[in-house]
Length: 137
Image (tube, rainbow, N blue to C red; front, side):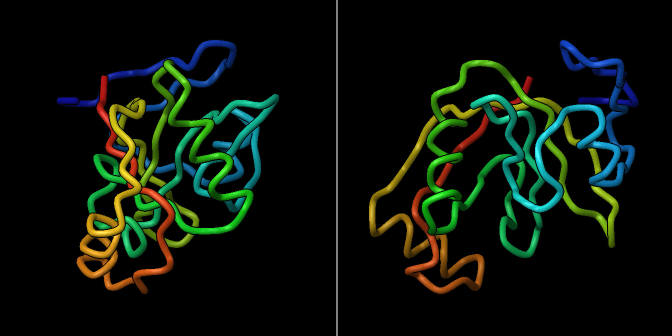
């Protein structure tokens, strides 16, 4: 991911530039999904990742999935998808930096690992449902 390589997402007319920031509205317009979840989805698949560093300090390499039926469902969907999706990390208010395309390489739901990851991120231990380890392209 060196320089400002243009990345096209199949089925869109939008190119994302590595290191450039986008609004959630622009991301939604290009890829679909909603404006607030960390794993926006459309037509039964996750279309991108939008990660806050305060909740995911090691993003985009490690994603800490929270709890709740919708959050856990879309984390599981993402974990089963094989395609690499565009990922963004929040850089400022309504500014999401494009960090490349990623897919899930491993899912951990071990209680000891969840506790350790929660503690490192200053999150309550019961706040996490799983840890997603991603790999970039």
